[in-house]
Amino acid sequence: MAALAGIEKGPIEEWLVANLPGFAAPATFTLVPGGRSNLTYRIEDAAGHVYALRRPPTGNTLHTAHDMGREWRFVSAMAGTAVPVATPRAHCTDRAVTGAEFTVMDFVEGQVLGSAEDAQALTLEARARAGEHMVEVLAALHALDPDERGIRGSRRGFAERQLARWSAQVRDTGVEGRELILFDEVHRLLAKHLPAETRGVVHGDFRPGNMAFGPDGSVVAVFDWELSTAGDPMADLAYLVSHWAEPGEEGPTAVEGFPRRADVAAHYGALTGRDVSGLGYWVAFHSWRSACIIAGVRARYLAGAMANDGYLDQVRADQAAGRLLAESARQALEVAGLN
Image: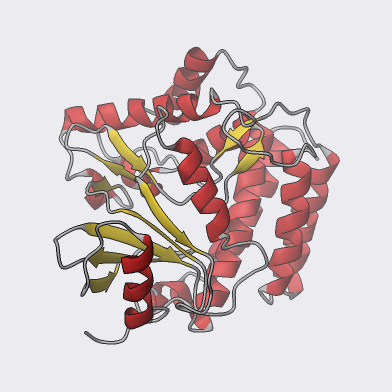
């Protein structure tokens, strides 16, 4: 097997034999392409069991942005609830094993909707079901009590602490000049108009590309919990709406069969009884936060920290994406009258 970035095969196999009941060495490791935050590997052991191993990038990571312990806690907290997740199996805190903490869970087979082509693999009926079930899973997540699930996130406002976190981290990426001025301007407006908040479990990256879907369109697993926290559930809804493409736009939900953005928000409001009229602020917030995240992803790929999964050329071609998202956030605030 060719060497894989972030994988010390021998030490990992030894650790898995000792800590994962039923694991049989030797195993094969394959990089799963498409992850933009953490590295994901498919592991098939000698007995035919298939697992997913997730670890941070191999270098140039942002402070608190790749917390595998957080992901492990949240996946474990979701297990057994109405929120489908991959079954958690083991968490390694010994960085000597392969250079970083990592988590191991069952590998979930399913269709991940990262593009329109992915969505076209589902039938028209399955697309409609996928659109409905995503919202139902989000409502189920937000019905959970953070304290009852052992999630003891800060009582400080979600938006307030997220604004502080990402504003600091975007500077670590090397953003400067006019782009940084724009980031700071949007940050100032968002901080000026902080909303009153409620508290629930927030996924932080809830979108079709972070889920696996079954043939009927049902969500079979929600992935990528490393940004999860206790916070305002409206942040998750706005994030989903922000990533919801409509006909004529680019994205999986632009394909025929999926509901429109307004239908997504209305369905969520009907399921939860929440007032969704304040989505404008949170849509702007997530455009700005996504711009910060993209700046970090770009910095990691250009620094060679994300292994060779074929995405580097796209990163180089899309260097304006963060600036465009930040401009979108500013426009959303203007539309909402928050300037």
